[in-house]
Figure 1 (cartoon, rainbow, N blue to C red):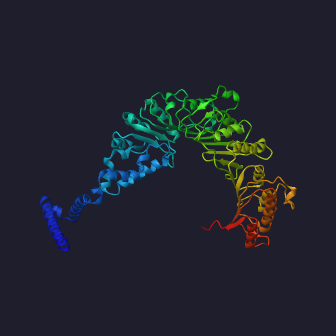
Figure 2 (tube, rainbow, N blue to C red):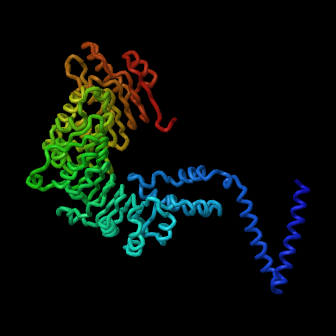
Figure 3 (cartoon, rainbow, N blue to C red):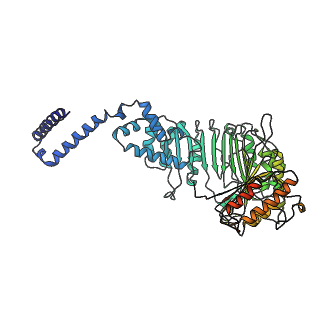
Length: 552
């Protein structure tokens, strides 16, 4: 190799001298240092090009390179309705960054039309990208973000785009200022469009008026996925029967038109509906369909402002028994939606379908707002505001939970409470007759809730612990098997006393109860050491575990 290197240097030096002499014969000024540097640069470019022809990249078969690049750029997801618009922006940035890696990468990317199918219609020079895309199915999009407050002009793109209407498979935007452009585009006809995301330019003041669904014609024979914000299609649109995914975002008024749209979408596999406003009176909903049959639906998520709004849709829905379901009611419960309707929505019995084997309930708050309860099954969920202690909802919530649990054959229920106050404990107490097998209470950030408050609640219905178990033969939470307390100081004497009294009662009536207590980040006091307390509880059949949330 050393002899070969010397030979190459000798031949290359001789070659360069010949180039310099040839340049001087053409022009005397060619002997200047600047011209010589230019010759060196040209030779360097040629050598690099020839070298790249022999790199591993250039030796790879094109299909392998395409697969690697396609995975890097998420090429298979460009037309997915649920791909975030941010990811489309990231795809575009990554594409241009990869072009800068090497000349070989640039040549490969520019020569393959499929890499240029995602086009930001507000970006500079979209016409050149359209040319590179050739006949590839197009994804046209625009993304609202920093620096996009000014209204762009879409006219410069429209003229060039008119020759590509049959290529558009996806049209998406979250920009209100792109609404008119998209409506004009839809009215022009997009026969191969499969995915549409449309955001209407509207103010909150318009919410009391029904949004007139614009006529966009019948030229959407292949549309399958529709996402809208502030806009409802006409229930007479013939293409509704072809939809597989329908996502309706606020601002959205729950009205008669909306129910008629859903009735027309018989082939839906996914429905997500979030209405932040509803009818002012029952007269507005006169003539609402009593049955909305969606036999192909696999997943449905409904969020409405009031129970009244839910009462128009939940009882009317006929869903496949194995579909996933979720219902969220923003304001506190009211009587318009019956426990039976909610129970049937969460679980539809069917031959060969076993009822849920377990259920979970979580008490939580968001940013100091009113308390909420999330109830979940295997494939269903319910999120609601149980209501203040003085409201109808306070009595209705326990009745609802009892009806739901009974409907699904009373599976074991796990309850979690976080960021709680004493009202949450009162609400929990009203659920004491349910088949609750596990309770986890996170007292961090709790408002004046102590471990004694919780133990009193679990130990008896009296405000303090009784000394004689025989005095209280209707103890709460008889099915509780595991208790977890986190983030509060705890008196071990009080804990062992409560469990001892409770276990005496349970033994008397041949019942089983608590078998495990876990204390997480709980400073302990009371004169009883942890080892002594563990031995006492073990003698009662209860395992005591302490842990630190920061460990492991």
